[in-house]
Image (cartoon, rainbow, N blue to C red; front, side):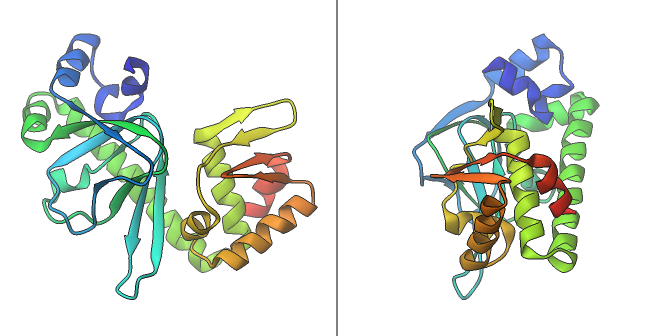
Length: 224
C-alpha cells in the first residue's frame, strides 16, 4: 500500500515521516463492483486515493445518456476539485472492480496545505494535468474520428493497466462494451466496428473486459 500511496500526487512531495502522518489521518473505504463513492450533485468534502481496483468517473445528461470521463487505478486521485472550489460533485465515482480507497476530509487536509506549500503545489499540478487531458479530449472529439479515439483510449488504458506478455500488452480494463463506448464518446455500434476492424488487421485481440494489444505501434499511428 505504501508504494501505491507514494505515487499519488498528494504524497509525492512528502518525506517518509510526513507521509506516514498524513496516511494516519485518512480513512479506508472498500467497495464492491458497481458501488458508488459519491454521485453527481452530492456535496463534496473529501478527496480519495485509489489503493486497489479501478474507479470510473461518469456524468449523466438530462435525457439519460452517460459519458465516461476517466478510469482511475492505483495511485491515482480524485475528488480534489471540491477542495479548491467547494460545490456539488461534477461526476459520479463508481467501482469497476472490488476496490480499496483512502479518503481524506478537506478539514484534515487544510493544515497540510497551509503548513507545507509543496503539498498544495503537488495538488495544483495534478489539477493542471487533468485540465490538460480535458482540453486534449475536447480536441479529439472535434478533430479525431471514432477509430482514432478508440485507438487512443486503448493506448491510454494500456499505460496504466497493461501487462507485457510474449505476444503483446494485456490490458484488463474491466469495462463493458457500453462503458468503453462512453469513454470514447461514441455509440457502442461504432466503437465495436472500430474494434472489429483493428482485430481483423491483427492489431488487437479482444477478450472479456480486456484486450491484448498485438501491434501498439500501428495503434499509435492510427490514434494521431
